[in-house]
Image (cartoon, rainbow, N blue to C red; front, top):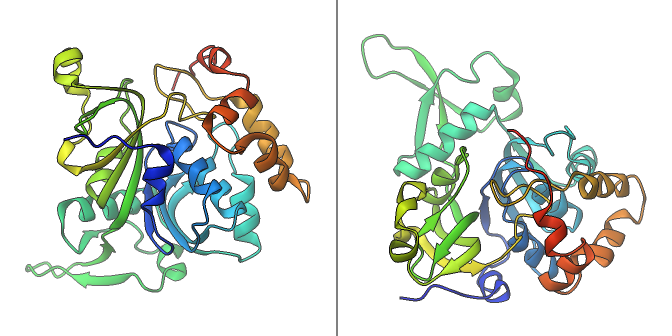
Length: 292
């Protein structure tokens, strides 16, 4: 079985109104090549589920988003994602803002195929005030404790960026932190993986890295070769985040034409164009890897 497709083919299978999970964490190992291809597409009315980073702000700025379900939206060293902030303050999008732990439990419930996860998280806080759809449940056991029923955060499709993959959908991710990409994948009906490197058979060429597999290949529908596909976020051991680029991106949000200029000057028509405009492969390889 060969699950390899081009970026355009992979994103061409998405539809308006989908619920899309995005792997990574803040400005760390985000599937930005896939996100940029969505920016180049006509897709709209999307719901995003993410520990959010620049992908959330960019898709909001481009008018692709109807709703965001999130634990935070941040660029790490730059605490607030400026375009998400603008959309939020303007009331341009619906939101479900959650405690980070509640968000994790929602992903875990979806991954385990149960409708909700009982938790004490959120009790006595404004999370319940601002999310009136959240329900409380009583423990069925003798204690009768009342708990929050955190609903499963199921997605139509999830996008995850990994260090390497093979044509059959096996994946490996270098680095010490897998974030919650295993849950993002298991919470989805379909998974599209972008990879720094795609080979024929990981079991033959990278068998020593089997413990770096984040999830089973049966979950993966599509594999996309996307070298430097996490830029400007980090890609674990491959390259660090491009903080000058992210700062310039944030500065643009202060200008009325900032987003249009970013689309024109960087996103461009395709990934080779983007790579050239951000300084080329060698410049990205030389980005220092932060000690996270």
